[in-house]
Length: 245
Image 1: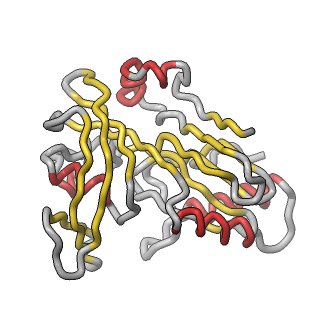
Image 2: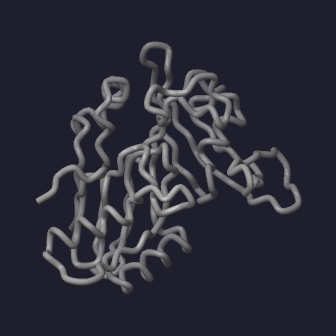
């Protein structure tokens, strides 16, 4: 079986496929015409199960192209419909790791901004007060620690807005490493940014059992150095895993 898909499977059952996406891969197709995660996932399922004809694989949510980590896909229309309902009703918890150069002013905080997206430029602007046409965005962050003058934050988004984590951290003066679109002064060598969808947990919408997934860090010495900072994460050794009961 082909092994060079740009993702690792963390969890799979009859309805869901949860993967750890590599940074630089589109979640779904766009005007670039580059192959997307959805297309790769369909090819993976077609090959794994020797399926004939079309394969169903629906994207439940997206990650920006330069972001790595957890993405939930649905293998059935029933799974897609029920997962979409979970997201709509905010019944899914997600945690991200972000690396920044400038330490935030507080160790823990809740950020609230009002975001307006320029669809032509694909850039989001953040405002401190309500604006006409703006969407309210909320997240919580927790400071974990520093390595080589960079700082690791744990981010829990409370809303799901485009580019939310990126623009909200930039708005407090702590843009994500490599994110030149939102104010970091220098791009990373691979063009990606140090934002990783680390953990997710929810009640499986069909099995009705708790499911927790953790996405191992990218195979990158810079990322892996940060594992030493969080005692809860050291045991993971940058590995993918899931827990279900």
